[in-house]
Structure formats: C-alpha cells, structure tokens
Image 1 (cartoon, rainbow, N blue to C red):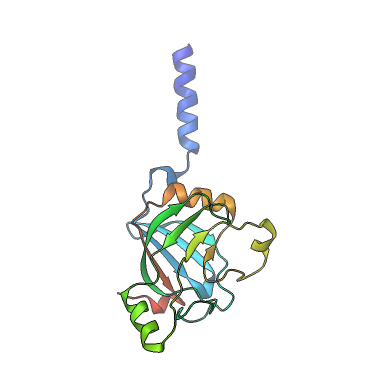
Image 2: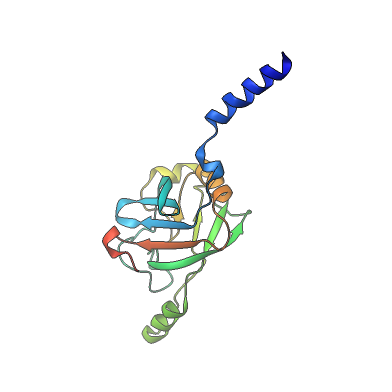
Length: 165
C-alpha cells in the first residue's frame, strides 16, 4: 500500500516538474528591440524573459558611459554571487574587435557588462535603466543562474534580422 502511494506521488510530481530542469542552455539570445532574452537549447526556445537595457539601447556599445548594451557574440564567462543587483553573470565585452574600435576612436570601451537582477526592486518597472547591462527580475536571475552555465555563448542584436552567422 505504501509503495503504491509513493509511486503514485512520484508520478504526479514528475508530471508537474518543469521541462527546464532537464534542459541545457547552449545559447542565450537577446533581441534588444523586443526587450526579450531567450534561452535556447538545440535551436528551441526553452525560456523567455522580458528585459531592461542600457538607457541608450539602440546601437552597439563603443565607449564607457554611452549607456549602450553591446551587440555581437560574446561568452558568459563568470558568475558574480555578490552583485549589487542581486546576482549576475558577466558578458565577455569588450572583445578584440571592440577594443580595436575603441582604440581607433581614442576612447575607453568600458566593460563589466552583466546579465543581472533588478536591485533596487522598483527599478525593474522602468524601461532601460541600466548603464549597459541586461536586467531581469531577481527571481528570474535565480532561474537564469541555475539554467545557464559559465562558457555559454550570448548573442546580442537589435533585431532578429541583425543576427550574425
């Protein structure tokens, strides 16, 4: 009797477990014009987040303080558990091309661009409040950190048609 009850309970729990628990994210895609971030596994979107960006979101980040979110393909290269914005994962901006462009222009390319939570809490309600980072809610950031591994590529573009191949 107990064995049947346990089996039934486990079966019911398994039915309601999110499919995300079994998924591994192999790409994070950000479409800035849509204010969306997608977690992708083998070409399929497994999770979608509404995002806030830098205060001047259109166009590629060129220099520190321009409030732009970079565009291109980068790597999520480390996690930061003690972020002022709850938790965070670092984006590998600037890359070699970004540094070369900044040098050509005689500017500092900036850096320390992250996907992070939304501390202080009321900031998330405002669109595009970051200094160039990508913000989601704290609960979403907890989920993101569980699903996305260090080393996962991130593609950031203005529109879907801007996708780099």
